[in-house]
Length: 116
Image (cartoon, rainbow, N blue to C red; front, side, top):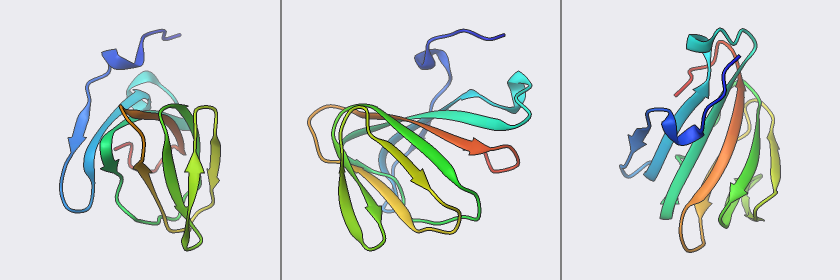
């Protein structure tokens, strides 16, 4: 069993044209013996965004805090604390922070996908 605060996991930072102001943390993954899923926590700074991309695996997202938008089927949809997102495999997507302060969300992916 593992219990910790997500902020104790070492962040990996992304800041480029493709992804701005992103900190990602693997909070439960292969190193913990998780055989089926990987849990990651992302923080997007004000005006930050993930890269627009697609991949073959599905993933599930829970918005913990902040306000943002997700790009889905060619349009931007609002996100608020408590929002959940299911992104099927091969669907283009992107998340951006549209609020003040950080946008924090949890993302689950299947084992075998790159953890970060």
